[in-house]
Length: 133
Image (cartoon, rainbow, N blue to C red; front, side):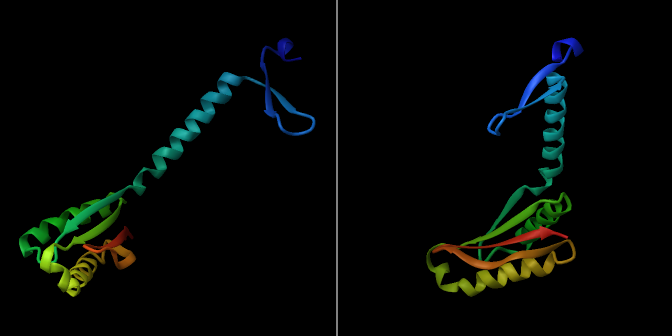
């Protein structure tokens, strides 16, 4: 039957009883499946995770640059992971790290919202995740 029509006989469900086959143009089917997968990848690209790294005593000017980049990432619909690193004696001042992360969340609240609150990820690192609105 498939030869008469000039199409391919494609096994659709080989594990069923009896196996199911369809008469179709296999090249066209593969092309359409490839296009569908490409479209799905294109739509999901905005979900990238970017990271901004800070220290508990990052100066005002440097923090301004980091916040500008964070806003840029959120405008492009990317998630942003904000990380505060502690070194040496800074580990005694984890409250400064929490204050820094809360300040960052407050500064960008018009373009993004906090998905994950500030948490201690490791002994010397504290993180939070911000998603675009």
